[in-house]
Image 1 (spheres, one colour):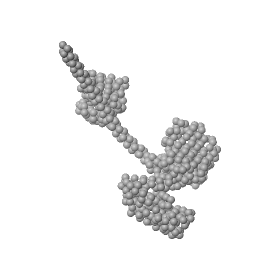
Image 2 (cartoon, rainbow over the protein chains, first blue to last red):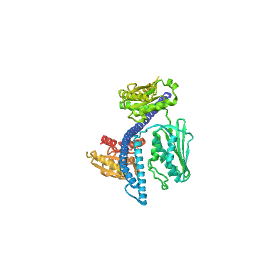
Image 3 (cartoon, each protein chain N blue to C red):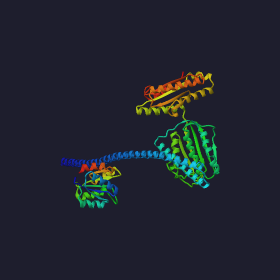
Image 4 (cartoon, chains in turn brown, cyan):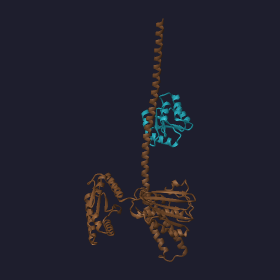
Length: 431
Length: 121
């Protein structure tokens, strides 16, 4: 009896366990199905994202192509527009000057309006050309050491009369006499003209303050005005193309809406930054910085850029180095002024004998480097020989007792990496 | 190919793109609907071999259309593809749970859709 009960009990337990197992199996199966379904969903989504991404890439490429087409179009149209405009301007000027016969007061008035509008049109076309070049990355800077204070003063002097007749003051704030940076002078002048011109346009009373400060490592320039200011909501759009705000336009020169966009591009091409602060009815202040380079950094940058291009094109790059032999000893016996004028003379000879841009000549403290992109060693040696001879001629002619050395380092013959070429170059000295 | 395809989408342009693309691929018998109820109605009367439905439809959705079509015809016929411009894994699972046969992205060249169609009919 006791035994039978026990057996029954055990049977019950087994039965229950079996039932549990079936239930668990069923649950597991359901979970597995659910998981498989989820996996299918994820796989589908994944695939779709891949497809959509590809489509996005394709569209992006199409847009890039269209953008390029647009730039090319603007570029060629601008060129075509410029030519006839030049002759129109010439003809109007001649009539105004009375070359084609007498004109009366009223005729001259109208002709002057024509002339002003022709000039405006030319400014717009020039701006369009600039922006299309900048956007295509085709604007090449022709850089040299320049005194930014001097550039600012030059621009201010051209505005002086306009400011005076509008009853505005233009303040100069130059704590240092000079602030030298390695820039494209014409382009920096263009930026100053843009910023000061803008300040003039939007300021009815008060003053415009131009400052240039020489900091270690960079030059900081700013143009501040007491004009109408820019609303907070417009500030982010300020450097965009064709943006014009708050035009009350008190009958002064009209803009193109491209100036600030061009200025920003120019400053950034110099690896500088441009910023704006503004308060409505209080005024606007533009500040831009121009980093200074030391010659070492500069020539390294040039050479690295050149070698990168050469290695991707399977091309060449040569650097021809000229320097004065035994400089350290000579420096003791010759006065500084004389040495300086001799090196300046040598640099001029080199520039005259080069068919490439001036940007390629970099002066170090005691050597001059000529970066020759795309030129292989043999050819570079020939060019160097010609320049070497010219320098010798120059020195004998001036009766300067200096000896010059020359060495050519070429990629890839003398080193197959940037580091190797730079090492080789820095080991060159005239002793 | 003689297969009848019903396309349901409330976006007229999308509808036109899909229709043109399928015609180009040789499917000549294509009918369209711009809403869920119209779609289910046409599925009932036209007896298509394949239903393609957008996920989002005014006042309803593609999954609902799918369930109703299945209620009419049962699990095997017609084949149903849910298409979408907004890819979502949760939607994909819901499509499968509503007994759709496939779920795929709307693209301008309709390539993924055609691939899905070719697998089904």
